[in-house]
Image (cartoon, rainbow, N blue to C red; front, side, top):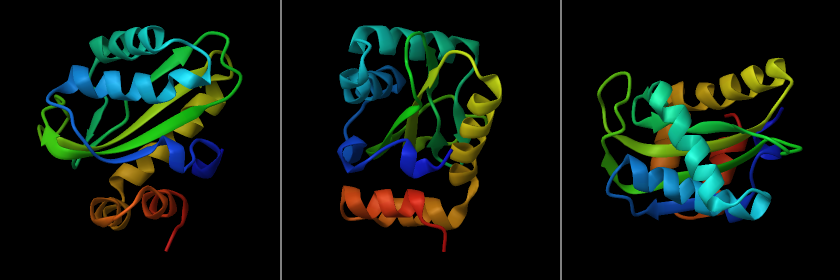
Length: 148
């Protein structure tokens, strides 16, 4: 699965405003609601996943994700937050980069591979530095999908 298959510029938001983790999950749900499930259903699924443990991976990057029944493909959205927020990340650092991901049920191998591919982006300082400097959604999409 390629990152470019998960999102387009319409699902990239820069300088998104959120005051807390719950509002970030709502932003992700609202941005992905036109993919089939309702915003409320997506938000509930993301919140349920967060109760298992934070998806804040460290270094300011979070990967909130949820399995969604009836979804026929993986769907993502990327947000750069206007200001970092507490996400209960593994390293305790606040989060300013968020990649939300909806995962179809079944095919656990594809789910693990896709989550790993997105997580690698968050661990790559070259990518995260570029994302923090992007001026528009297309530039951010390029940073997410192009390796230097």
